[in-house]
Length: 116
Image 1 (cartoon, rainbow, N blue to C red):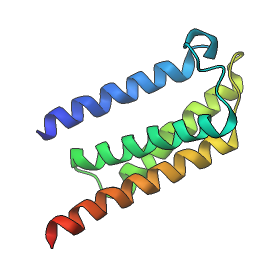
Image 2 (image 1 turned 30 degrees about the vertical axis):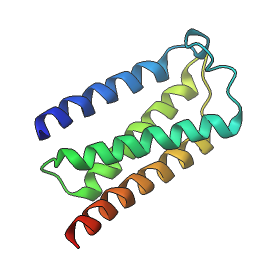
Image 3 (image 1 turned 120 degrees about the vertical axis):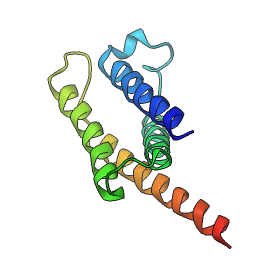
């Protein structure tokens, strides 16, 4: 099952990278999102990535995995700084970080309750 999680994880990274680099006008309804909805989407995407990444049980420490996921989001934002149709937004990074923390907490709570 871990192999399936890993395949889904890396496909998810590729899809997120693709959707982050195409102009927002190419994605239906994305340009119409307000500030709160946009940040909520960032939060949910990175919650999903961190939870799924932790399920994969990679042979690296949890901290390295979570920092790598955050670095992925940071890389996208840096690309946005230079992309003509996208904007670098510090609140996107904050939303990403909060999603990663929430995904990690959710993952740890799951195993805490399974233990007892």
